[in-house]
Length: 389
Image 1 (cartoon, rainbow, N blue to C red):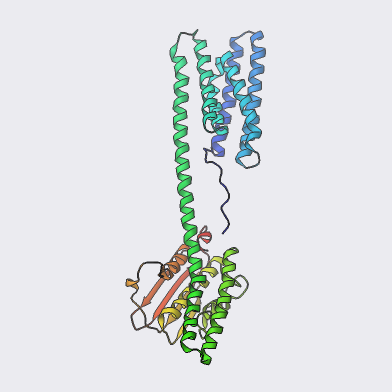
Image 2: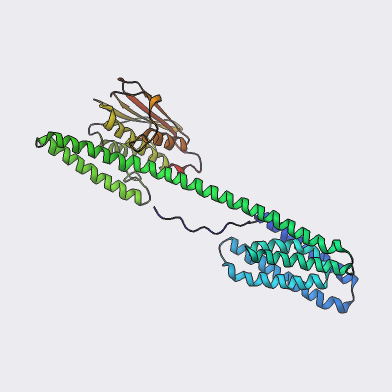
């Protein structure tokens, strides 16, 4: 099973609409601040300040575009960090010289936190807050302490909130990764149980029977059967390594594929079909094949049956599978939990079927045989195929 690709460090990513609101707010506030500044200052002061404001706007636009491209995976991070540093430097100069532009600090803060992580993020955010504080304190003729402390307190509060959201996202991402790993382990365990484990167990039974009857002709037949089963088991194992697909399932008609899977364990078993056959979703075909393999393998290993059959039924919106044997039966309510000695079969079958929106039932009584019945929708719910394979 290939290793999962490395995941980028989790960070807060504003969705497109929030990004648009932040950028629009920056543009509106910059225009309003520029108009306010021009109306309150002489043309000589306006020229260089407006030019600096225009530079900040250009740097902001370039940085915002590059940030969006980085989110989309089309740009490397270091290609736009230079622009972010230049933007912060120009912004610090502008807000100290012209505090009228201080209201745009919020948009700059969000961009800095998108650009940086760790201590650089705190430095960039702190520089933005400190420049705003100095600019507003300067407007008050260096007398209003609230103008100095307000931006610093707001910056600290935003930083704490941002860090809290970031930690929550990291914890959520870790939980999702753990859940994904657990689901993948469960999926692979079902595949191994329904192919490798069942095949090896049946081969062991055949070889033990051959050992007991050796050198009678029946022993040679059992050895040959065990050899064929091990060859098929090897093919299944290779298939499991390569895309975890079922050999021949994608091309062979479903009844033939089910019969081939069942005859790996019982030579005389046949598949009966009711209803009008039609194409099924690949994940449904796969689940039906694995349930058949597991159920028939259990018959071989435990049932001591004289007769067994598989019935595939096509309903208007569903497909059914019934595996019957007239063996010794068992009490479904007293099945022991899975352990190193086995016990995964029924649980794996039920999980396969239920993850595709279907139902599986087991009807059995000691001494009266067993029926394993599964019903699955012909088209499983969206998003269920990956988990069910």
